Picture 1 (cartoon, one colour):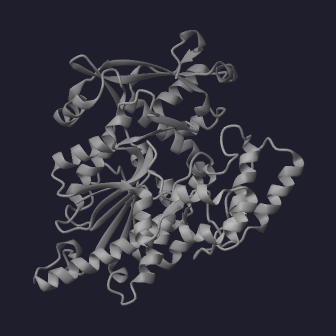
Picture 2 (cartoon, rainbow, N blue to C red):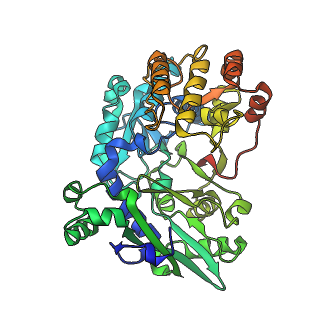
Picture 3 (cartoon, rainbow, N blue to C red):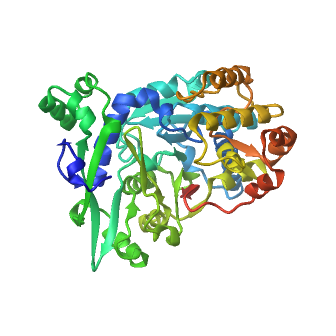
Length: 481
């Protein structure tokens, strides 16, 4: 973001609320770059299995416990009853990505369900607004064994009118909320203001586009077929910002939002995740009265001290896509206003660790403990550290799934180093660490201790990492019923 208008070569749009431009640009991002998502960001479910396994084990235990209780109390369970009286359990995933979470969830559920009490009754519904995303998710090879469980629904996750009210037992949403419409608001005297955006194109790319008016028309109308003929432009957007008074007729939950801002300092921008609020409202409609509930995994904070920090990272851009931190404190307030009986927030790694009955850290947390880790490393040196760490862990790590680690090497790298690192990549076993975004247990790291020390890790620093407090912006699990 810049305020220097002299650096802005050509406008391609007028000032609009940030959430409106976010929705516009994110739709362009998925339309133009949806098949290359992993080039721009990864999630904890892109290739790793631990989050999905934790969800599957949790779901199995809670369904069995609920149905035992209903038998004891002689009460029918409404969450698994359809109009034809066939006993079914509908699990819905909002934004299924590449299908890996669904594949690992269903595979592990089938494994833990030794008596066939739950898995045979599950109907797993994948929901996304982009047909290409749903097609990609269904193409996941590990979903072949579960195709009779799967259904898809193409539509907005905030409005699923075709799904009957009260028929869903479990809703899962992994790293989708940060992609949904979000406003940035700040208190100015007695009023609340929100951030507006006006996009421009960089001077370099502006000069490379011969028919400027045709390009602007295609950008405004989101004409993807036309835009694909132009040079890639999403990385070259330059935006002006300004704050204007909130137009409340366009914003729901005014009273809840206004009350929340009483605890926020003046002039401090804070995310207001409207898309998240909308999915909660829809979840309340969809969930059966005794449903297991709604679980969301995303990055953000519920700490008012962090939210009051004017320098906190409210959002980032990844290849042109806007990704916002989640204001879990306000999310909880809206959930309670909507009448959710139970709300719960915990660090995501605690949810995963509880399922495994041990402490866990992510591979990225482990990498951060290395003495040389940090901005001083060149990109290829970071690649080298990551691959040497994975190779050390792979000496003892054994995944239940066969995966090829997707790891594009940095372009700017000495030829000799490239050959060495490519050799490491080719030598990595398929049942080793599945991704750079993966969870590790204390036992797995301890068994690799000698090999990690050879890479330069300090055992004491690693031990501290397993019990460290959450960082200001952390991945959290938010649940409600």
